[in-house]
Image 1 (cartoon, rainbow, N blue to C red):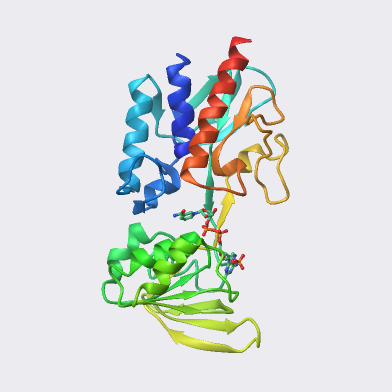
Image 2 (cartoon, rainbow, N blue to C red):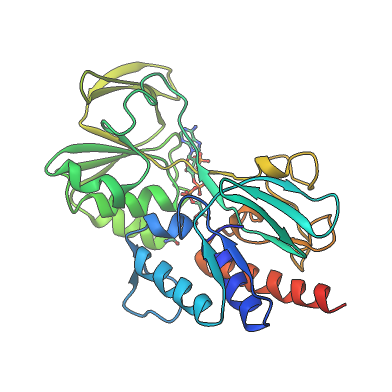
Length: 296
Ligand code: NAP
């Protein structure tokens, strides 16, 4: 279940072991990588590679060995007996083993105006929406790698990009931090949160609050890009599979969940690394464990 790097790699390894895996892709084929402009840290591509192109290569490689991709979303999973039953919009599937690679979804700010102006100035994807903001003034909310990477990407189109972060220290890595600091279109606003988004047909301002003094001010802006982390997609597994306090699936070092024959890989089970390369590795490992389980 899932078609990000973890699901794709699991499919490749399972297919090469002649298991004839079915990949229920979810509604966003390729997962978060599909929304990434440039991937510079996946080994094997010294010049970098576009996210959607990497997704195509992942899929082609898994299909070459017989993985079957079904563009569909799981709606319910019955873990109570084997074969496990996975219900989806198009029907039911039976599986002797399951690899859960359902990834994570973007976290929202939860402030007034955010939902109302999503698609009209509020966005969670620079690659998807950046080109609508030619020569515009944008803010990017967040202080992690996504905010930095997407902020840099958005300078291709925008006149200015202000990265608004709730603390005075970034969470993202030094390479992206330096790249952002060197970019003349990017500036930083520290110790600041967005408390409201205003507009009419589209966004024209935000209310910003200084987290130290509590002082609020209105700030004119054309677009708000939000990159404040993710929430693991685990709602289908609640009450059955072990999760940590943040909702990530708990797996052991061999990707085993608490149900024999059910494995989890990638960001749904990884609150820490959340990289394409680590997710791909987890997916391959989960499939190898599934192979052993089925052989036994
Ligand atoms: P992240 O590392 O969890 O960072 C989220 C940022 O949003 C943090 O700076 C956090 O502030 C801030 N934040 C969280 N909730 C907020 C709220 N309600 N209001 C305002 N700010 C809020 O998430 P991410 O940047 O999406 O990265 C996720 C993972 O993917 C990381 O492991 C990252 O390294 C990886 N990634 C890697 C690359 C790359 O290597 N090129 C690119 C993108 C992502 P605090 O810092 O105060 O907590």
